[in-house]
Structure formats: C-alpha cells, structure tokens
Length: 109
Image 1 (tube, rainbow, N blue to C red):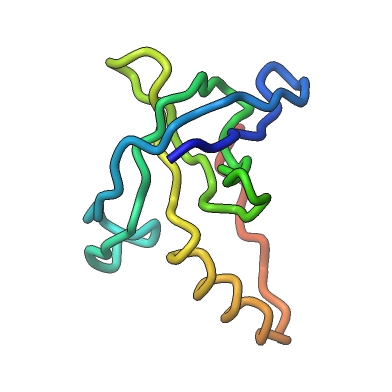
Image 2 (cartoon, rainbow, N blue to C red):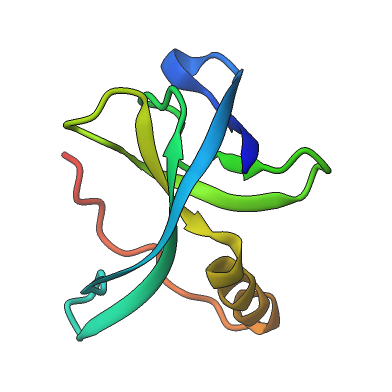
C-alpha cells in the first residue's frame, strides 16, 4: 500500500513516499513495566530519519494510517509505525479524561 511519511528530519518538514510492506502484532513490555501488551504495527519502506518519529503515515486519500515510532537499524530505508487502529482507542480514551496529571520527572538530563 502506497503512503506518505510526514516528518521533520533534521528540523525540516519533509514528506517522503513509502510503502507499507507488512502489518504485524508486536508484543513488548509497556512503558511502566506492568506487563506485556500487543500493538499492531506497520513495517514501512521509506526514508525514515531522526525527526520522523511522531509523524503520520498518510494514505493517498489523506487518511492517517499510523504514527512513525522507529527507524530500522539494520535495513536502510525501513521503519515502523503504530497502526492507526491501535491509536484510535488510545485517543478516544484520552479525549474523555478531564483530571489533571503530572508531567513527571524529566529523565533526560
């Protein structure tokens, strides 16, 4: 499936053509180390660099198909994106939240 990868590599907006090569379920620990969860991801053939993370994968009709989260470290011009079906539920739950939450401690420093 043909897509566009929209990101800001090196701080500059850069749309890149790409192809979704595979759809997989990846099982890993959650960020709080409270168990293993499955995430539906795409393997994307496209130029993905620093600054692409967090950018959308967009279908020819303009619909967002996913969000880039990683560049492949072994195969050039490959990366990974969370499938939008996973994100729809997360965004839907976030929209219903009204309570304040702490931003937590900064770990980069």
